[in-house]
Image (cartoon, rainbow, N blue to C red; front, side, top):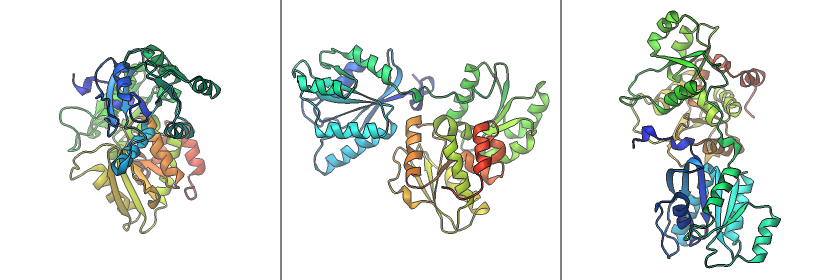
Length: 415
């Protein structure tokens, strides 16, 4: 089946499986999914790097199972594997801590401490009950700590239904992601989507944020009209009723703003996704930091996916050029792409992030939090471009709480 017909990975519940080596994590995944997806061996350390498996698990629905290496892996290579496993926490919506009836190891307690610190819900799986009788003291400890747990024999598939029920029960409410724009329109109201066709557009299809926005409008009984930027004025003139909202690709903000009457709300796909995937209140504060950049400031341009950069690439070419033209010519830019987020964030004065359409909300929020904790503000492409074009105020009007908070706190340095 084409990936275009599947639920995007970023919209799936991410379930991280953690535990020591040889705890039966891979066998558990096979039992949970009803498929032989993970390699199973009697030898410890079979799983090396984290492995991501997108699937449907009834009655949970679409999810991503993340199979991690053992937390007690040894040697230099083992330490790297453990580091990779711990990085998985950033994108985990709910965790499964796998152990046996003998009780928690120090590794188990450490991972639980990290999960609690990050407010990530977790379920304890006491595996291998077919060979290891759970110690009474251990079961009493689980009850005393009010941990959700289930006794399982993954190899015999006992307790799997109970595990699924616990995963559903404990899945975070924030995973029920807010609508992209369903709270901005009423049934029957229309939206105009402005989609330029440039060299960065994939051949023969639209990009994910555009498709997801269309689906969200339909899910909320709205109507949408699609045009290119040079057809917007003609499109608006032809409509019998003015649209509730115009949504544009951020690169065309200046032209679209000029062609859209002031009594029609305007924003961008990127700003919609700043709210949908992240924390719009916090990201807007990055706009203040952008305007305050000084000579020799360091800016990180972060992309969630890897792609071949085009000559007019938005992140690597256009945004740096616009910042140098509008803020200061002596600003230094670094770039990162893919799943790995730099550990040296504190070296930067600002992070400008893409819309994060390939990230789940948990990971995007984690990136924002990791940066803000080190005193580094973050904003995304859409907010950056709106700021540089002097139209951020207008682009935030569809979101009244954020808009008025921005007006109230616009002056002064980023804190």
